[in-house]
Image (cartoon, rainbow, N blue to C red; front, side):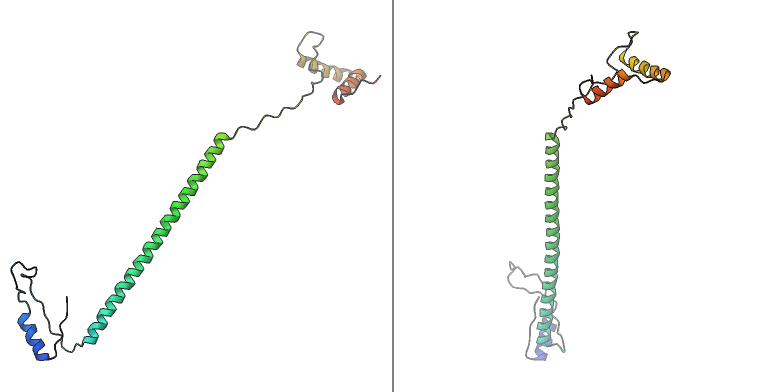
Length: 165
């Protein structure tokens, strides 16, 4: 692609009509030997218009390249931020797994238990301790009289004090 400027309009028209669609010629081994000329006379066309058009084309190309570069930079930044997020999530998950492996169950609380009242002594019939407690409750209900000795023993066991004399 190119332009040729002539001083005289007549010469420009003559050259354009003679060379248009003519072979370029030259040596047979030359690169453009079989190519054809494509010339056109542009009436009412000045060189300044041509240079202005070329400059406008360059500006448009530069703007398009700048826009593409900005879009590529945004995509790159987004991709890198997603990589950083993925690394952070992986490290959080690995720390959670590591903590879960090393974390033990909390120790069971060991409290000193007091002996249950009336459940440890066998009853008169040789039954189980639970039977003693049940039969003792039933006996109290029947008599409806408080057993003073049992109450004193119960209080002393609950508060672990010496028996009153």
